[in-house]
Amino acid sequence: MKKKLFIVALIIIIIAAFIVAAVGYNVDIKYRNHVSVIVPIGEEYNMNDIKKITDEVFGNSDIVLEKSGLYNDEVSIRVADASDEQLETLKNKINEKYNIVQSINVNIGEDYNIEDAQNAVKEALGKDDIKVEKESENESYISIEASLLTEKDIENINDKINEKFGLSNKADSIRATNVISSSNIPRVRLMDMASQYILFTLIATVVVLAYYIIRYRKLGIKDVLQDSITVLAFAELLYMAIIAITRFPVNKLIVMGAFTIYFAVIIYLNAKYIGKLEKIKNK
Image (cartoon, rainbow, N blue to C red):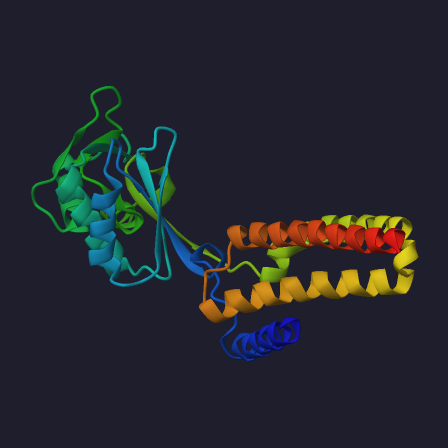
């Protein structure tokens, strides 16, 4: 029976090796090349509503949603890719759902015509119903009443204002609170993910093997050492083979699973060697 189980396990490992060589592991989106999109909503929101919106915008792509922000008033969206058009659609759907209103402040200078500023902003956002006025406390700034915007919208406003008034302002000088931001996140190599645990595992394994050799030396140092290393390695290989075949996403949970198996095997080996020692004593 044990021989049959070993053969089955070996076949699983061989099949998994071909799968990994061909397509690799199914790595969780957090550890692949992806786009991280932050949407500041500014109020309580229902994650199910956000999920419906993102499904409509990004289709069947792998999407990870998380609440973020100091008061959980932002949503973090991880998606394989996000075009400007998709971000624009996302913005419109979020605005439609939550009716976000914010005040954006842009520094123009002392001498300008407010109508020129209004026209520049309307042209930048492609809307006519935009409220633009001079700030009451500092008229060198204009105040724009707007909804949730994208970074592209902010760049357009800045470019049109610069063009209209001959300025050279940077887009990040515009004061706004509700802006959808996106950033490209590079992939994390599996070896980089595992490297932080390798040293700990090696030290723990050396200590455990040294303990086995000392305590169970009557069973034969070579046999104990060889058996322990073989069982530990085979168990982990089988575990990773199952992960590869089932296409379960590789993430930190998988690493925790590997440690669980590691400790389970250590306990199993210890119990096994104790049983063998008892048999020798009883002879």
